[in-house]
Length: 44
Image (tube, rainbow, N blue to C red; front, side):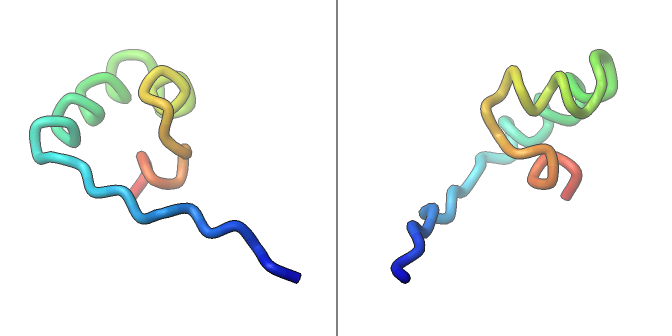
C-alpha cells in the first residue's frame, strides 16, 4: 500500500547548536518534544 513519506527536513547550523544545548540541559527526549523533532533525529 502507499506509505506516506515524510519530506526530508534540513536544519540550520544555529538550530542544531541550540538543539544540542537544550538536550544537554533538559535531556534528549524532552528536547525532542519541545523542538518537535523525532528523538532519533536529535540523537544523530
